[in-house]
Image: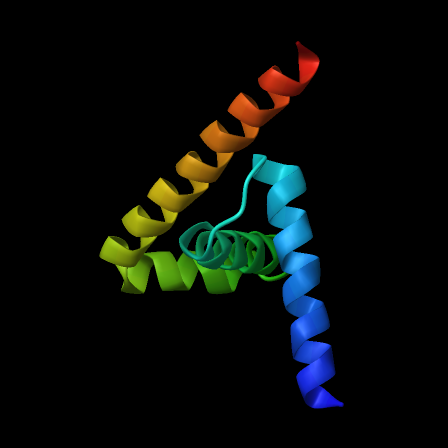
Length: 83
């Protein structure tokens, strides 16, 4: 059953990535996973994220790049859908 769940959950993530960004690939999916988890943690436990950002400033910068990339890809995808 665990194998089925993992495959089904990956399918959910793939569809989310497709709807969010307009395309899918493994590298982007990993970024979407990190982005979505980081966003959730930031909303539910902001003090933890603040501590992590202070503890790992290089990782914080990497996360900012991931967030910006996903935001840009999402905006591009949304603008193409409006046409």
